[in-house]
Length: 457
Image (cartoon, rainbow, N blue to C red; front, side):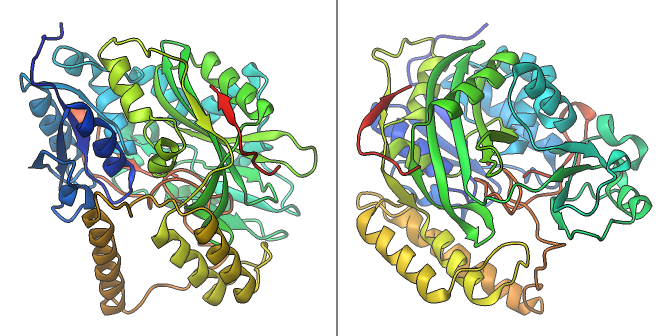
């Protein structure tokens, strides 16, 4: 039973991605008290003008059970109404302990069994097949035979736990997505031994543009949706989003809705697709069941998902059908720098590398024509500078550790949301210690030109 409260507050975990700051900038001006909880005071959200309170939390990478306990303790505050999931650890803990959270706050997220259908990619692709949604050809490693093709090897699970890995959980590295060169099959026994499970092999879709279908669902019914096309990732082969544009493509809408309806989804979802050049069909990559890192762009385009999420949590009707503007672009400046660095210094043999001059002109042109930025805004500038400080600090630490490793086609790691070659909207994979309810986890996450008109969700 949820309590009625007067001084309504929301808890938003503070992470390096811009999604936390986007939630603060959306909710604080509406009179909702914002609490940022993080293991690090240097998270950009902690310095936002729209943050009311900062709370130090255990690091979910190493203390996931304690992290879940801390979230539940904050949920017990009389004024806290709900918690916003912004990373995989958040949604895992919230879904795993949904009944306990439901005694204290609103819980607009899926139950654990539904979430599991998303975390296990075998189950996810089976759901896509039932829903009539296209997927790349995908098999378990021990079932794949044609190594003459361009393929990727990826974890079966987006979150590792004893439920999935059994006794191997303690010593296995579930791993991330890697390219597989044609004609060079992996050592199956070594891969399974290292990862602690049999991963998936998937045909590589030769198009690095990622298409995202973003949605908020209320017990199987869509509340709001949004679409974007990622034009540039952090790497020239893809990676987390550096520049993206809002689009409206009916076929993308149809595919995203069909899959989420099949799952009887409740809560947030980013459904990632690639468009297969061979047949033009949208092929499912995965679902990220929480807010995405490019959330500030969605809000700037007119899809104010943090507020919709709050309204859903409070059982408030959305007064009018939401719309967003098609044809807008938005940047993460740190991502654009990473993209140019990738063009200048890295080599991915399966992906054509643009010339540095061409890449620089494209970035500069889009910055002038589409001056929208995830962190950099006039009325809340400090998070942008804090993000820059964090970037420099991370670079200095990498130099003191002997310099960043050289990436190759075989060892490129994914972002939280998706494969490196297709882009994504998240952070690097993380490893975590023990999870809530005695279930320790390690996560292996992977989160046509536009027209200047408006589209309805």
